[in-house]
Length: 116
Image (cartoon, rainbow, N blue to C red; front, side, top):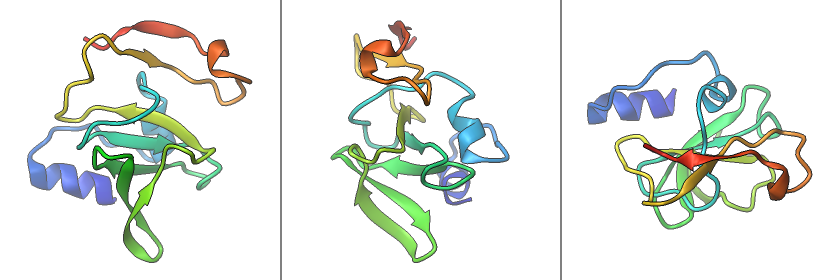
């Protein structure tokens, strides 16, 4: 529950979900490079329950693994689903993407309007 603990300590209100994958599908996700403080999401290829990390804004994240808290690059992971801001606004004019797990290419993803 690393993400939940960090958000609690930072005073950021956030819902709790039984798994990271349920959190990921609970709302729209942006694709690509996540701003610092955003939560990055991964599908069941990383773990049956999904996986999350906290973006550092430079293409890396902090996440809790069996070996402890680690910093790693994430954007090229095949299981990377996208990111959602927590306390950080999305880039102006960006659109978010809800990425079906079985879509062949990014052009197959439905496009949604910019994050409010």
